[in-house]
Amino acid sequence: MKKLIGREREIQELERCLASNQSEFVIVYGRRRVGKTFLVDEYFKHSYDFSFVGGHNLSIKKQLRNFAKAIKRYAKLPKLPKFEDWSEAFDALTDLIESISEDRKKVIFIDEMPWIDTPHSDFVEEFENFWNGWAARRRDILLLASGSATSWMMDNLIENQGGLHCRITSNIYLRPFTLQEVEQYLAMKKSTWDRYQIVQAYMILGGVPFYWSLLDTHASLVQNIDRLFFQKNAILNIEFDELYSALFTNADKYVQVVQLLANHKEGLTRNQIGEGVKLDGRALTAILRNLERCDFILKYSQLGNKTKDAIYRLSDFYTLFYLKYVHANNSLDEQWWSKHFLTHSVEAWQGQTFELVCLLHTDAIKQKLGIAGIATDIASWRYTPKKDSTEKGAQVDMVISRADRVINLCEIKFAVGKYQITKTYSDYLRDRVELFKAKSKTKYSVVQTLVTTYGVADGINSAIVQQEVTLEDLFN
Image (tube, rainbow, N blue to C red):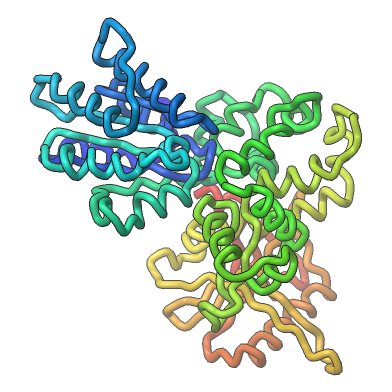
């Protein structure tokens, strides 16, 4: 397990399930490419009593044939068995496990389970019967089910209202790496990249381990982006269509939603999304729920309103970068990023994307502010004056409302050095605090907080910032 980065809680849970005195049904799920199969394979050292991987877009006949091949291999059968349906397939699996006489947990790993559930296959029903009628009644079975289609895993397993209701004994949800975990991964690869470069890469790749595994850390980040996105048949150029089609039925509807959100970095409400893609009701609800489950979008409330007008924001860094610079790029220049990464357009994009990095590292920000043990709500705040008003509008992307009756208004800036606060910017921050107090009617103390790469430069206007969070703090 030396290759595993992070995942300490997940490893502890696998250890608990392996050592328990009852049969365990463990769900391992999360975004595609996040490392679910890698975690299980590394922990169990590829040593299973039975393992099977579902095939994408395969017919029931081909799925059953592949399952038969796995049974033949693990049971050491002289010839390939033939299964007419999943009932016969699970009967064969039962016979295989019962033939093992050792007094230990028998480990069964079924990977990409959503792909196995082809139309009219009755896979879920027969799987329920296998677990409820046989495996759960024993004490020596450790069954692991994994899949990237998180919506299927939630609907058919975790929130199953039929035979599997409350039958799952453990949920392991793998999230993308944090900045700290990415740094640990790069250290294992003997990378010399500094934290500024790592954050720049994180804005493009997010915390998806598979994408980081593609990097050549002996080359520059710019060279890597050209190779992975802009060269002919680049692997992360062709990844986009496969990513969404592998996860979602009617993937084009999901892509419409993420394309709309990609054009509105500040996020949109549910009604705004519905108007933009001409969807509403259950269809829109399902799409937003499934995108959120798969870590593609982030849903957060507006201050003082926990449910109504929640903001949805595209939070998948790969998708954001692809739609911004690859999908819309008609150039055949294989060094396109090398020639454009220093432009004002990219600089503005980095500033917006750094806000998202911070939103996904609020635990580290709270740690730096010394409020890790205090209950908080993370929200946004917007004020839009009426059309005939002379007032100015304002927006705060991250508001930390604390149980100790303090509010941190977080301003987020990405800069190449210490951030210099001018008198104009100082006046803007001061006016915004007063507007926030007046319109939110808060009775909490308001603390102006700046999250930036290298902190605030000393100067006559720097006193407007009461607390600072730097790039270094985001790695803790």
